[in-house]
Image (cartoon, rainbow, N blue to C red; front, top):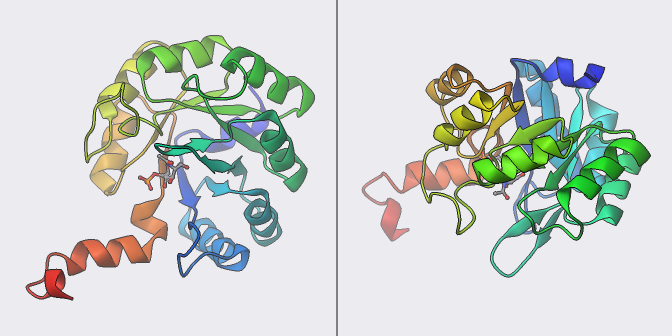
Length: 225
Ligand SMILES: CC(=O)N[C@H](C=O)[C@@H](O)[C@H](O)[C@H](O)COP(=O)(O)O
C-alpha cells in the first residue's frame, strides 16, 4: 500500500470546499479551513480545484485529496476527465478523487490505471452503488468512497449517510471511505463500525452558511426572514 494511504487509516478527512458565490469562496479561506482541520486532528483534507489545492498545500502538511467538480445537467461530476486529474497532480494533490459512476470521459479501469501509472498518485473512486464500488476496486482504485450515494437516480435518496453501502462495500473487501452527509460523532463511529477505512466530513465542519441556515430554520422567526 502506498504510504500516504496508511496516513488515512482510521482517520477523519475534512472536506474543505466552497462553491462560487459562497462567502468562503477563496483559496485563502479554504487554506484557513484546512489549517483548522489540521489543528483539530484531521488525518487529511479533501479539496476542490487546483487553485485551492495549491493554497492548502502551502498552508498545511496534511495529505490532500484533490478533486475538480464539473457541473453537469443534474449534478456536479467529480474530476470526470484526464486533463483535470493531471492538473490536480501538478498542483500537488497527493490522492486524486474521480468520478467512478460510469460518467467520466473514460472507463474507470483506464482512468484509474492512468492516474496510478502516469501521475503516480493513488485513486479515490467516488461511487453511488455497490456495483460501481466493486468495479472501481477491481479496476485498481486505492480507495472507494460512498460520496455520490443519494445524488444519482440509481442510489437511495436519503438525508442521512448511506452506511448500508459502506457496510456492503467493506464486507466485499473494498477499502471503503464513508463520505456524504456525515454530520455527527455518532455517524463517524457508526461508519467505522460498518467497516470504513476512513471517513470524510464536509458541510458539518466547513460550511457555516449551511449550518446557520439549518439552525435558523428551526427558530420561530427563521422561516420569515
Ligand atoms: C455530492 C458531492 O458533490 N459531494 C462533494 C464531493 O466532494 C462535496 O460537495 C461534499 O461536501 C463532500 O462529499 C462531503 O460531503 P458532506 O458535505 O455531505 O459531508
